Image (cartoon, rainbow, N blue to C red):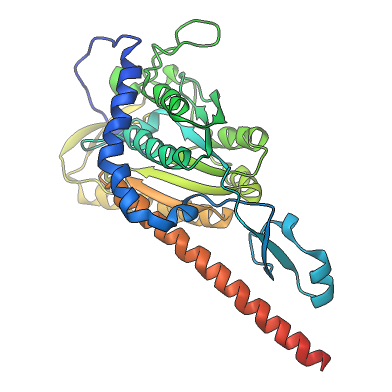
Length: 361
């Protein structure tokens, strides 16, 4: 588990219960002016690459490709051409998008002006607003929002601004003020602020639990955004792959530059965000910094390989990234992949048809 720099902050008076609602509305208004309006002028016709839909109107037939839904195989054409072919349908815009949100303590870390948790909140708000404005619905599963390594909030998929504000309210409300189904307030879980240690969270992050819960919760084919730093116990790759076989899955990976390379800061205290273990490290030691960077690079390579093997698209967001630029890069990547797959499918289908015709002739 990577360590996060220990940050002590002055104690602040607890906000009122009504404050998060006002904060959510103000945040949405700010993001609509600073990010969403900018995306409106640049996305233009590329919204369809952000959220891939399905439909009932047949648009085309092409040769089967890796990661295609086997339910769309046209068995008559396949038997006739002796090559698997799939039906391509006109997209149905009334789709659902689900956000699987990792709110474990390691996400509440940032070495600069923003924490990963703030990046999570902003990117979810922007994507959810873009999706609901096109008539689609959004839902969410929250993991670790009440101080335990479990899925403790399920927000059904619905549309509209009020529903979006409810989701933002959940992300903005401190756990200490969040009301549980029993009517009691939940425990405070922000370790970076409280310094309360591992007992406040109840164990290490198990991202597999969040993904497995989504497999059983999200039944209809949807676009699923997994928003996490992927600092977790192993074993999440299998349920992620299972989720990707049924849905269009996007991994939104949160990271901080300090998790990849340590600067020379001298003797500093570091703390594991989830176990609470603290120790002093000498970052002036060049060998230590090199070992840290090497281990971080190895973990990066393993993580990217796991995500690619699961067959999901990945959007990487650092705490010092420009959110609008990152979303645009991601949309352009999906557009290129979609065009490449469609073009390759048509090319292979035409070549196969010609080859079959020549063989018959």
